[in-house]
Image: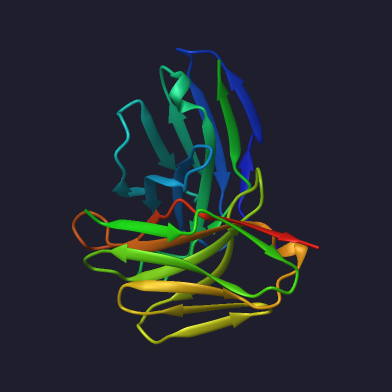
Length: 114
Length: 115
């Protein structure tokens, strides 16, 4: 079975540019969450989407936005990139949003802003 | 503020030398505690979920336990291939309390097992 897939795997952007990251969840999973992981730290929650609706948002600026499509795949958009946005961006897939729901991560997209 | 703290930050073991990693949390409304393994440059790999104090789960050389304020990941007779960063995450309700997707992670413990 295919796991969570993310694209691209690596990306280099210039300050001020815009970036779109993509995620396909595990088949049958309806919830997608996005996390940012900077080097040496644990992942930080950005968004959760379930059935195309935003269900949670972390402490990130409005430059970060996301959406979920009818096939449950998702995009994370970041505008006006800053050097500090350089990180590993992780997508997590889960069946739903209940209390007994396990999250499975993709391999991540490594974003470097220069 | 809800916090998750892992200790030690780094741990070096000889092959076969058993030890434990700690994850402590100050939370309200805890719904689940998760352990993940992460190799360099890769996404976290799911290991265990624990939901109630006293619960234990095992997988190969790993055993996770949970109390009301902390969790331990016990590693028995580790091998070099167990070298990785081990992440602990706590599940919280989202704003409004109607769904539970947010995971708050600790900073991780970097485990190195020497042959």
